[in-house]
Image (cartoon, rainbow, N blue to C red; front, side, top):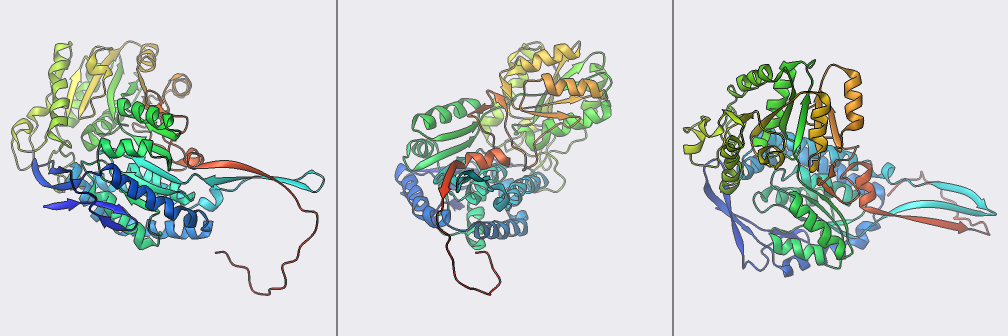
Amino acid sequence: MKSVKHWINGALADGDAARTAELFNPATGEVSGAVALASAADVDAAVAAAAAAYPGWRDASLTKRASVLFRFRELMYAHRDELAALISAEHGKVHSDALGEVARGLEVVEFACGIPHLLKGGYSEGVSTRVDSYSIRQPLGVVAGITPFNFPAMVPMWMFPVAIACGNTFVLKPSERDPSASLLMARLWQEAGLPDGVFNVVQGDKVSVDRLLEHPDVRAVSFVGSTPIAKYVYESGTAHGKRVQALGGAKNHMLVLPDADLDLVADSAVSAGFGSAGERCMAISVVLAVEPIGDELVEKIVERVGRLTVGPGDDSRSEMGPLVTGPHRDKVASYLDLGVEEGAKLVVDGRETPVLGGGKAARTPGFWLGPTVLDHVPAGSRTHTEEIFGPVLSIVRVRSYEEGLEVINGGAYGNGTAIFTNDGGAARRFQNEVEVGMVGINVPIPVPMAFYSFGGWKSSLFGDTHVHGTEGVHFYTRGKVVTSRWLDPSHGGVNLGFPTNG
């Protein structure tokens, strides 16, 4: 049985050890270990370590910071299988999916390696007689990241590479459901040469979250999770004077026009709906089928779902694993009966899905629910509008592009969406009219590359900046404008050595 601890000031830390939470193997339902739950004093110790390390890291040259990031990237790549195995064991997603998570996170690390360019300011010579003005961006200090269970490596890597590259020090509070990836990343940071205290990890629950939100030395907080908690984090953090970006939930729609390639659509809907057992904030959970294509499209989706292999994350044959916890599985499964009560037709029941090495999902030990398809889901019903966060794909029939657009724009969320069509004019109109932050055109999961920024609209985002990309750099820095006058020339002496950076 493993014991997962904190990482404070470059070393594992037990903390006060008064509270722990059980860790589970989602494929079997068995307890696999325990994770420490930080007290307020544990959080204070991590923040103190970060605050002590900040002046030295802030003053490290951009070249130094970039060199550490390059080494961290290489170490992460070398240990990617180990990291993916930890994710599969605690989250349940299959190994290939976990590897993809690590790869997408590393894109942000690679983006942050360009920090010398990303922090270039502007310069105006001679704004007045012998007066120059220039702009610079400087780090904030100690910043924190609070991250969810569904991407225990990628989402933290949306945050800490950019924050650390900008000269901040970082305290990570990962999900207590799958915390082990955080400690491997901490160890690799240390091996890469990051000074102790620059990156810290506190395991925990609401106690640690609240302390980070109120701690006077934490300057900014990044959060990804459900909308109610995102709203709480934003309101509490800003009330304590912090800069906050809080990304919330989603209900992502795929609008399918009659001229679309339905084989491509079916492949995309199944891939985007059931990857990682639907536990993605960018999963496609609703297909808006513009009639008369609904019947044919559902037939193609059902045929593909029937070929999926569901099994443990460490079995190379598995394409989809279990859900993360038993209570979450039960909540997701409750929507199958609710959907039927609301008038939908249950065309694929994930409770009856066979599981590798077991029986049907509902009668196999572990947190299993197979891919589920609900057809003729009434627009505006709970099944349609609520974030299910599991392998449940809802088909909503609409009569036109305009009706489909109205359904999307009428929702509470605005994270991701997609349109499938061969009509360039319709696609261009959609990207202009849809009220969603990330849009795919014949692309089902439009997660931006790291040099763009990730984030939604409406109840999917609280705050005014998205994560990574240039908005991430701006979130973790603040601008300063300097106006200078030098009346006398100065001379630094003779040095014939080749100039170097450092």
